Length: 420
Image 1: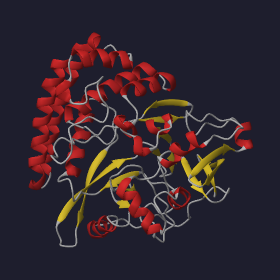
Image 2: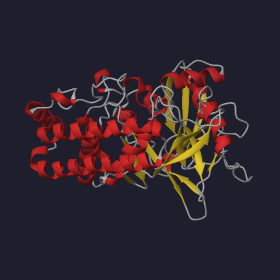
Image 3: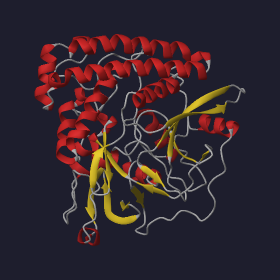
Image 4: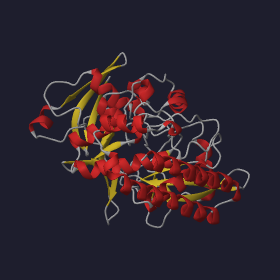
């Protein structure tokens, strides 16, 4: 199957998928016009890019695990029929590309945006995406996909704070519903993201949006602004391009963890030095982000949770996302997605781990230990502050989880300052 790739709304190249293998070739006109590359790992050239580069880039646009299985079932296909999955969901994905079966750039309908979702209709939608992720059977022309193993839905949030289905327009926000498996996951991520912002990290705006379930009980969804979208004063939304570390390194999503051959911290710093501008600024942001993830107990900070954002011809470290305390859930392990040197557990950090980390990343943490300890103190206070704000604003069912996250952050802060 041949699929046409549109980049920033213009034809860019042709994706050919045969027997689960992929090949991508930039269009001759695109090469001649010196258009920007889809990936820093796939510069613009006449020759086609082989499966080793192409497959990881496009496969990483799809959801993972159970969500991909459900999506495939809805589409009447298998979870490895990448041609059908990308064709059905490639209208609104991460970054500035769309995947089409035609060389003609898609145009949104001239019709008004979809009606606002009230607490009841939003509740119906939350229930529906449990078994119909990304709503593949919709009648609105939507073809949606987001990476990750957690259920979520691209939406549009207007100036009045109302949510809408995107229809054929670019989405502006991502909605995450409560989890049946992990209590207070919505409040957990809200706390961690707001604490990160208070600590000075670069994060998108987040909010809670209420909905009502079939029994009449009210709950909250977590809604985050898409950093790969830019909406102007007239309400027109532009797609910005981004790519995660697995896409850059040519690693399929199934190998996103370091123990499976996925990215390590050394790879993140190497990528920033090679591609970002100014690299030194983004390296400092990454150091603080790593420490913050360790402080909140986010053991699931894998390679797909770190991305590059393309802004014109410049490449920068994207804002932080998916900041969640996983240690608060006893069913999840405490092994880190990426080790510090040879240390896979926070309690195993020692001088040898510090030395190995510095050798792997080229970052001299000891030279800035005082600054980083002050950051940890600030971040620890930010977690406590934002937890109290959420306890005052949310239902009591989430409070025990929020309070435990504060205790985890207090314990981890002490371990980190001892390590530094």
